[in-house]
Amino acid sequence: MAKRDYYEVLGVEKSASADEIKKTYRKLAVKFHPDKNPGDKSAEDKFKEIGEAYDVLGDEEKRAAYDRHGHAAFQGASAQGAGGFHDPFEVFREVFGGGGGGGGGIFEEFFGGGSRRSSRNGPSRGSDLRYDLEISLEEAAKGTEKSIDLERSVSCEKCSGSGSAKPGGTKTCSTCGGAGQVIATRGFFQVQQPCPDCHGAGQIISNPCPDCRGQGRVEKSTRIKLRIPAGITESARLRSSGNGDNGMRGGPAGDLYVVIHIRRHEIFAREDDDLYCEIPLSFTKAALGGDLVVPTLEGKATVKIPAGTQSSTVFRLRGKGMPRLQSSSKGDLMVRVQVEVPTNLTSDQKEKLKAFSDACGGENEPMAESFFEKAKRFFS
Image (cartoon, one colour):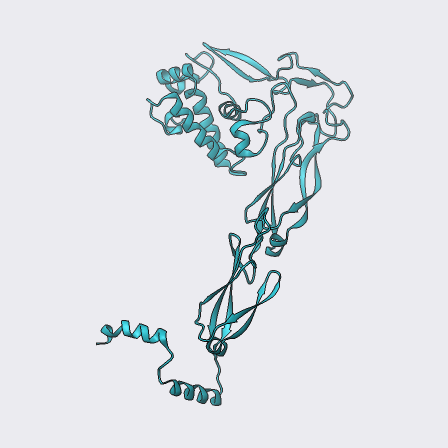
């Protein structure tokens, strides 16, 4: 498949300045980064494509070669101006100020921790993991502790995470001298790339551990306890540090991110820290007034219903909503009453209601009077 024009990939003009190109790349890289789009193959492909485009257009010499020869400038070592491409994650770290293995800079601000790649000449950091957890509204209101089970990479017990079957079975890679990177010369470019022998690890294992096959880690089912704070909201993300995958060959573990989902409640709907519910109100109580018992997350509460209450009237119960995170205050409970019209009346009940209607003589109906006053011109 033919590659798209790099300027088109980044959405910039050919006359764009270096600052404009970098600014556009930063915006797109954050939008399509795999950590922001877990499991989305199209986003990952887009991230790689914009990384390749910026690797060329963000470099003065590569951009000049590309402007003269297009994609042909990078096809084969003998092509004029040929050069290889950096790993898109390496490009991302360099642009966002996280050149080392610990991420840092804007990368840490967006993704909450280390990068997906390790530092050169060192063990690689493990991947971050995501777990979606569903809880009830009551658990979200009161806070709770949950145990979650997940499969994750942990340090191999047989080799203690070294990846070697025997102590001292690891030696420095002679090809890269332990740097994990080699420099290849292509035309007038010098390209740094992972060592082909140690694959960027900087070390060679002569006798790999049979349990982990030299990886230094194995897959294992793990149970993790997690505290859910009171007042947590839908889609909130909790970070459990060090409970992601272990790194390769003794590298540090990534983090576990737990995304909270709150089950739909049969009575209450939530909006921010307030709760809403609809409660039926009898015709007689709406007309005469009285006490109405309503449910709350803490038990029962009583609402005073004034005589003549209309359907859809909302009553506010202060402090009966959801707790606010890291605060002692709470939201409110909004109770909307719906006046219930009696059905299946007996003959005696119908007679009494008719007598009541006749006694009213069309009075005591302010809403109807107001409406028909406005609508007179439609009946003339």
